[in-house]
Amino acid sequence: MDKLLVATTNRGKLREFRQLLSQMGIQVLSLDDMPEKIDVEEDRETFLENALKKAKTYGDFYKIPVIAEDAGLEVEALDNYPGVYSARFYSIPYGGVEQVDGDKDSANIKKLLRLLKGKENRRARFVSVVVFYYPDDFGLWTEGYCYGQIIDEPRGDKGFGYDPVFVPEGYDKTMAELEPEEKNRISHRGKAVRKLISLLSKIYSTPKSNNITR
Image 1: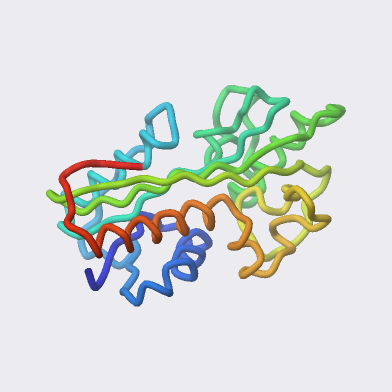
Image 2: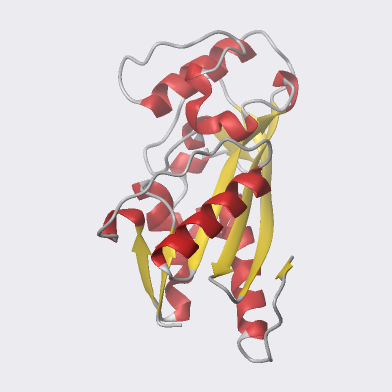
């Protein structure tokens, strides 16, 4: 395997994947690099189902190994919302639709902070489910979590998504204030990808079987 596709157009997410996968010595492509474009709707009810759908659809279409992820923020006081709706939280009925004045990340954060106003329980966690799919051969998946708290105002400009309002356990900085190496060490995505790399290393050193495993 000399190259694989990371099924995303999100530049922040792609940057993190490339940093995490750099040790594998393979070319990491994004959906923007593919000559023919297809859309895959993330319409499933769980992170795993969404990631599986994306990995298999893109892998079968492009005939290339694929890594697909679905990730999001679960907030305890909001019934674990935004969850699988994290990227489009601003637009769903739960808690009311938030107008997009600038970018969608800002609208998502604005809605989140509005719904949490006055609530003492600020516990939350980031979730990442990563699926690797080798067309007509095998697949596997891993998961990672990062626990922390939601603060009242955004801080930092080094992350994306909800990073500016999420402070990981044991830290006084938000995810968006951490250097990339430190964030990757503790993040949900970093944990899931390191598990994936470990599994791939074992699989490529032993005979493969036709299955999807965790």
